[in-house]
Image (cartoon, rainbow, N blue to C red; front, side, top):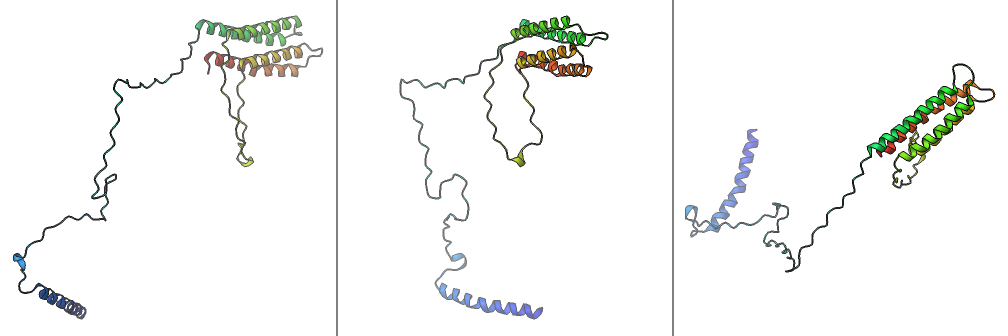
Length: 234
């Protein structure tokens, strides 16, 4: 370890000796040294390796002033920005018309309940005259309900969906859109007529009557939902 340190010291001495001799020779006898030497003035030189701030002009290039904003001509008033058009507010629903439509819906539900009771008497055969009278009244009540409801809103155009590849198609079918009140009333009247036909057949089939009764339930619920949807616009 000591021999290695001595070798390094001797090497440094050999290297530094010519440098010191050359410095002394260059300075000469008349050159001031130490405190007698004049200190040169320091000149700031920009370094290229120091990044400039974002947006700052290059060193030595004066910044470019922004062009002045042109003033409007004298005597010409400034153009005002037109106000943004706002869509008209939806008209408020008439409470009287709403109550009347709900009353018409209640009449239809009462008639359907009467049809179910008359078509399935606890004893004996159903009365055909009563059932036909209830069907005619149901037809009139459906027409009256449509007259009390507002017109159907104009639906926006629905874009045609792009068919997906077979491996990307959903496994479950998309839900069907809800029927309008017109379609619901048409379906309800058809199911009510099928119930009357099954109950008044020459040889009544209890299973067919029960199937007709069960088929009326979704249409009754759909009619109530479609009525509220038309009244609220939702």
